[in-house]
Length: 327
Image (cartoon, rainbow, N blue to C red; front, side):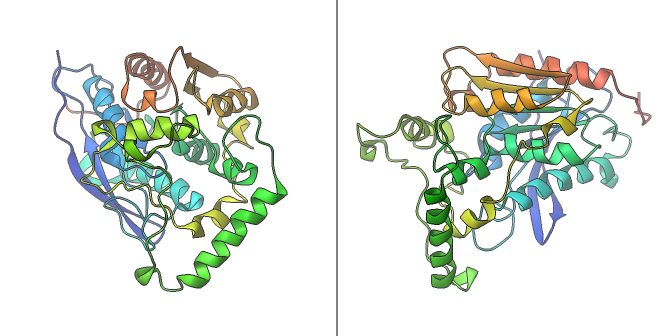
């Protein structure tokens, strides 16, 4: 049985940010994937050491290179204000990660540029979808608990029953405007409010189920990776960046490259994956995990791990092999 190697710290540019990543190489004794690699993108408010690392380790144990990284403005990556959630930066970060895998001098002859895929978790399920729609270097796309921050913001919530709301849009834009005026200098900005309560004792009994589930992940050892760099604090100036963004409007452009979207049957966000797969063209698959909520799949890879390994294995077996790997 293969063991997971220690990742290598890497860095690469994305727009005006320097991105901090960790590259997991194929584990000793793992199957020969002929240089296949997967970019693994973390959830909103997350960092690379949490669920992204869990999935990267699983992929490396199965013979893939796996690159987990902190989004611009977040984790160990640069950018001010800290915690900013800029959908277009997040999309560019994923494309920049592909560029790194395809062009880094120390990966030549190791990573096959024709065998690079993406895995996006939560909001990054949306960001990687948007990236793959317009980046043909991405040969396969998988998502776990995917969501669209644009629709969430315009709809004033993440549930399927939430529809676009003029009141929600006006409220988000007003909050963004007020924050920008109160914090004109990013380096001197006041601390933004936390998106999730992570002190389980402070979560009200009647709290929304999504936020209860979030606390069970981020407020316990399950989600405490990254030495406290994941603090769930998102500047409201993010809101006006999200309003006009949509992850899945052009989902059909991913075809004929394969698409797999995984969601828990009990996830409040399941409808995003269902709708996005419906909007896509073949080859596509919606894989629903019974009894699991949105956050369960962050660190329970019992069903998702083997499914992803099989998906990427089959996808990359169907593309051209473009580098000569050492024997």
